[in-house]
Length: 98
Image (tube, rainbow, N blue to C red; front, side, top):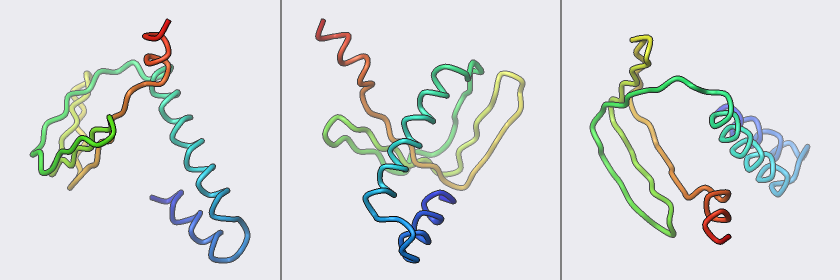
């Protein structure tokens, strides 16, 4: 949210174009996903109330209310609501074609 708000301010002030902001968001998403895959090794359990789910163009979207994430260390993290967007891994798709 902070990144999106900052990019909106930069677009409004004329410092960057909307196209550049979209490229920044795409790179952020890619870098975050790569980091999670390569560097995060802790398993987490998620419990909450599934409010909404949908599938569109091979992309699943889940809205979970009152989620609790419990780590292997028994540390718990809560929120009022989260949105999970899950899509096919491009690397897995390419590997399946070979």
